Amino acid sequence: LEVRIAGGWVRDKILGIVTHDVDVALNCTSGVQFATRLQTHLNHVPIGSDDNDIRETPKVAVISANPEQSKHLETATMRVHGMDVDFCNLRSGEIYQEHSRIPTTSMTFGTPLEDSLRRDFTINALFYNIESKQVEDCTGQ
Image 1 (tube, rainbow, N blue to C red):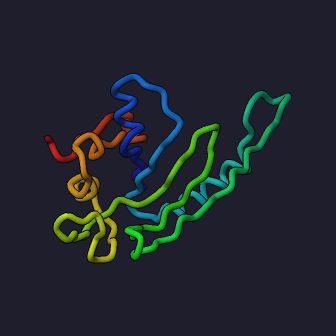
Image 2 (cartoon, helix red, strand yellow):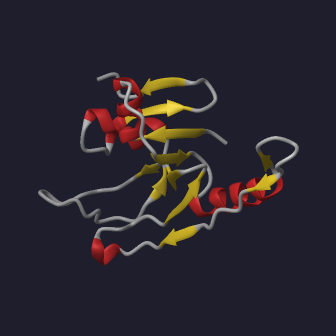
């Protein structure tokens, strides 16, 4: 499993701006599956000192796919340690009509490069790799 942060959080990190809105991109699982596993993990991991054993159990909300409204991807969202976090998988294979943001094909899992190439702005195509702790520019632009 590869976990990357995408979009505005990466831009803000580069600019030195603190943000509490994180978009997590996953390479081989859906956002709902990952968020559910994270929720279970957080329920078993104490936060704080041994004297104040607090367990965080954030709620997972699911934003369902709705192709009629340009929403072709199911997304999970939850609040973790005071941050709003959205989870979805990397995407590929989307074909768009000219002058439209609505894909005409269904979503398929993609690579970081494929996901980067479908994004609207170069800054949105950057990822922060959680494992390497590096900003990634898969497009080389």
